[in-house]
Length: 57
Image: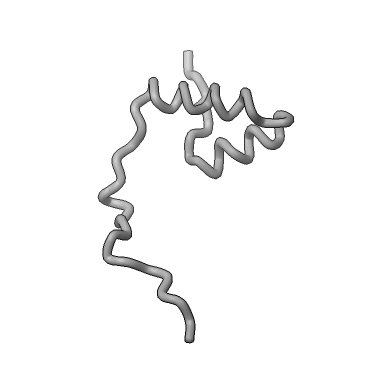
């Protein structure tokens, strides 16, 4: 028998709240500190949904 993969506690995309800029920035620094190289850092940031955005001047 297959295991149940969803629960009543699952969140819909419209219920998710975006990170505050400061929180995302702190998380990016932590990920960068523990990543073994730039490629791993980019992959982890993408997986967490906290990729840095391009700065527009």
